[in-house]
Image (cartoon, rainbow, N blue to C red):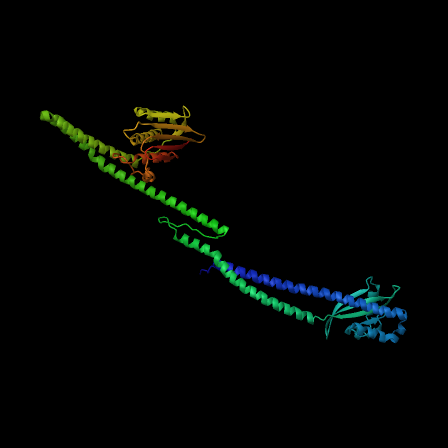
Length: 481
């Protein structure tokens, strides 16, 4: 059973919503934590401040009436201690250093249950402690409070009593403010969440729109049809890179399709060449022999008509030879022999071809006397013969022939340039010049340059040309050393 895959648009949408929601929770949590921390710090400061004020008031009364060493007189000044509770709105209790009660307005349950006295061991521990203070959190019917026990000292620094100060934190107002603040914050973040959802929807659509376009274009891509490139405005860097890669793939695909079509055309021509060569050459030899035999045997009887018969037979034999040459050209194109690469002096091989056409005003220029290249000598002679013949045939009869063959050696390649001052190649024919069926001559089959290109390709080389209409053509061959 296949699981439904989540779309990229939905993933982006959910991710953005989760991001905003998580940020909202973090802000709310940190706000609440910050409030609690500040509230605790404020209450601690307020408790310490009240306790210090309380100690000052108690020490004032004790020092004024010299009560630090006279516990028996404390009851006489009970009203003064009660007055302190009213002035500061606090509750407190005072015990002797042994834990016996001297004055109390509020006592925790454990003290009450201990006959209104502090635990003896606790009192000794508190008095002996250098800091002389102990705090704890207690819970009663009226709520939680901070219980503070501290040792009181007179103006001479002598310990004389233990103070119990319960601090009740009134957080109702602060919590009410916190609730109002959080409620407002909830509303703000709810609106922000709604806005974020809307933005996430449109952003996810914007981001994935380009990808959807690419997906549709890729789905329409085919090898044997015209493929359209993708052009996007305001695309991100990553999407733009993806689009450029797709467009490059389209260019490569078109090149591959052109090469495939070209290969198919060449294969079709090769198949046709084999058939034509086979169908034509089979009857030609018997026809030629028959005509020659007829010419020989009939000449004795004709007398004065013999020249006419000879002309007629020679004409037929010439036409048969022409057809045989056509068949041979087709056969050569179809069955190009396997290239046999050997280290050969390309200057010497080219010079032999130029010498054949010596009467046609052909000049050979080389950068070195001997340049050795790995090539098939027989095929190279065929290449140069074809190119020079094409150059000769391209020059009009009323123009002085000027054909130059240059051989230039560099570090990795050898360039051979064949230049002529012929009629050149017109714009409409430039794309077809190396096709096997192409020719601008009234005679010939148009296979010469096709064979030349095949031979150069088999040598891992390259052939190109530059042409100016009615001014001449330069063929450039590059061969690896």
